[in-house]
Image 1 (cartoon, rainbow, N blue to C red):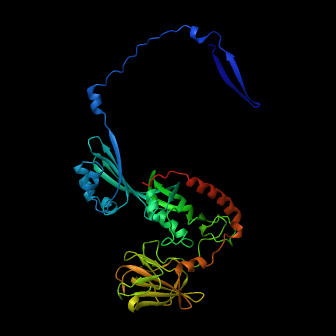
Image 2: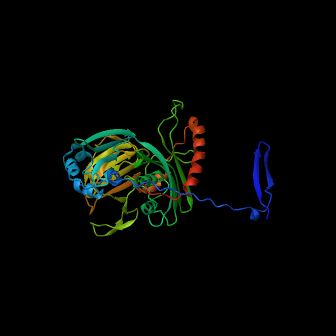
Image 3: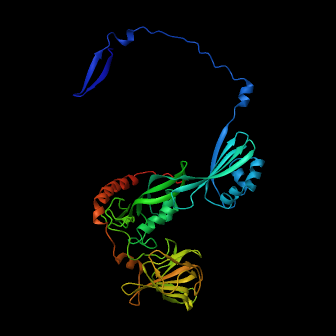
Length: 430
């Protein structure tokens, strides 16, 4: 059998395939055997082996019930001196114990002794995070608090509704804050309380904020797509560039990919997306024990949950009224009025101007209420009106004309990102 070698010759003019004859048949060529003695490495002396140390790294999330002993045990550390230091250290007591959800990592010697513990967390929107470092020193232990810059990375995810939005986002490991943002972004078009259907789906591109490479919290949704009942809704975050004309509002917001703002004159909900106990329909009144028209919408939420005004307006009443309990009435333009009832606390006064999204009170169960919830009404000319219809029909503002060229370029990229998000296998945020 003749042997050949195929060589690909590349040049500026293209490529050519050359076949080269190797000569005699391969079967007739002599075979030589080469033997070589391999010397094993000398075994390390026992004393040198004993001097070798093994360092382990473990991480977890703090719990509000943690003590020095329970935390170290969960991290695989058995070090009474370290536990004693943690119990007495002011920084550890202030920033670790009694705090839940903070990233914590420990460096351990092979004999379960504590070398270094690092806790990381974010406390505001300054773009920085806090780092508490507790480490072993020749004198014992030391602790110090540091501040460092967060680093943003982008993640893509997709999911399908089987029962609820949160069940779907849990399935693909999306943080709750991203689910909340999705509901808020599309709240003017999709009624997440009543209109979600099995088979609805979403694609989302969002930020994760990291400290020392550790994910600390979710950031902003950068773009998203939601398919509800076969209808596609898309959104992207856009903020005009700093060098835009002074006439352009520099405030960022969410827009459709053709440049229409998703911020409307009225929000559809006076609370961030939450479980709703009843909608705009007939119901059995829990106190009066009779079937009656439920004029408004009840938003089930824990006592103390912020209640926000759905639009700009002026407070016309803030006080107590029979079945409403603690209640606030706000007058808006176009003869529109909104009502917020059963509050545990009122945070505004009569005659006060309020802006859309401003916290005006806290959810409670005052008046004729059997459990904590916010009773919300919209009235137009004194007639009850469905809040969702109000939000959908309120006006929007497009991207400023001067910022359109930049917006259109970004929108084209967003479309590609959303297509990529639809095909990714999501990894959990941990």
